[in-house]
Length: 461
Image 1 (cartoon, rainbow, N blue to C red):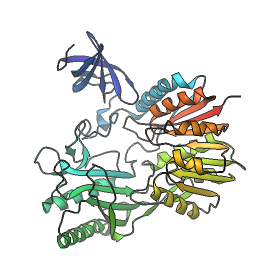
Image 2 (cartoon, rainbow, N blue to C red; image 1 turned 180 degrees about the horizontal axis):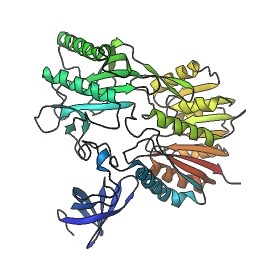
Image 3 (spheres, helix red, strand yellow; image 1 turned 120 degrees about the horizontal axis):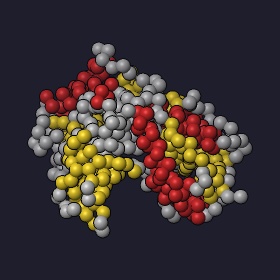
Image 4 (spheres, rainbow, N blue to C red; image 1 turned 60 degrees about the horizontal axis):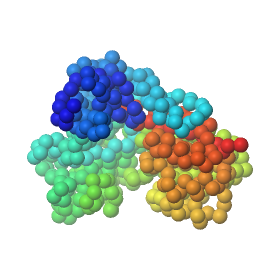
């Protein structure tokens, strides 16, 4: 086996999140973004210490798990979905088995409760961040997602099946508007150009929509004013003509001059309406701004948070710490009967939103603090009875873990958006007198390789 060589092999398994094991005549090779049962033409990219990694160049025989009738037109080109054409019941089996195998080394005698599916499999996303660019160098303007494996190429995903139909309509109209006017996109290497991203959010329960066009400041002020007024008129016109199922509540313009390829808010102006909307989850109401953290699958979030609530158990007369609290969703669910809930979140805007949401829901026993969990918990005099941990993808900071363990609480509920981080952190909990009592996967992202996991961690005897 040599680098650059092509082999043909069959995918016999996929480890979380997307590492396929491909068997061929002379051995095995790891290939990402594949489906069990596929026969592939694989190019060998790396061989080290007898282990090979490769890239799937073509599917020579499709997996029996694939249903061609549900295949998205962008599948394989767009980098978003891995399992999209796989029948959903098979997706759930696949993900559940992956999570069970991942947690096995750290779970001990824990109870694995399988996986809970998403109530919606298509059009479930309530937020999309589209990038402007071109699909081929110097080609026509594109607006959509990065092509799989590419830093530069953008695929216009106007047929995407996991985003709301209103998003597709807004994407098409936005692309047409700026293409007709020959407005250049921002080129990341040269740092020149105007158009950067299109951010669209829609509440599943209320149907309220916000559209935010994100650009650099590289345009004459008078020309920009005319351009953006025209764009706002175009988007508001969609609703006036009855071409949107939801209700448009805001059109915004965000300026972002960051060199990094991220949707950053240097300054936001309201072109139409307001810069927020409302969503409802499990009887609670939440005010959401363009850059608020909020689960991207509203109906799935209800399943997730209802699961978290059941894992928390009795909170009567107890002090609950909700660390990495975002906009305070879990904190507010726990607050109904708790003595006091303290939420800690590093994003100040999310902390402000959490306070507003708590007031909106009539909860006066919630306190939200802004700052890094690692530092903030040293300044809190109160001690928790229960910990709720919902960290970012990288998990809990290694220096924060000993501090959390030192509280000595009997119950910890860990909500993980990256189960490999949970497995790593669980090993530390195990070493310090805690064990995993039970865990369940919750599929928030149908079609993709990702899933959330909720684990109940208890103190030994």
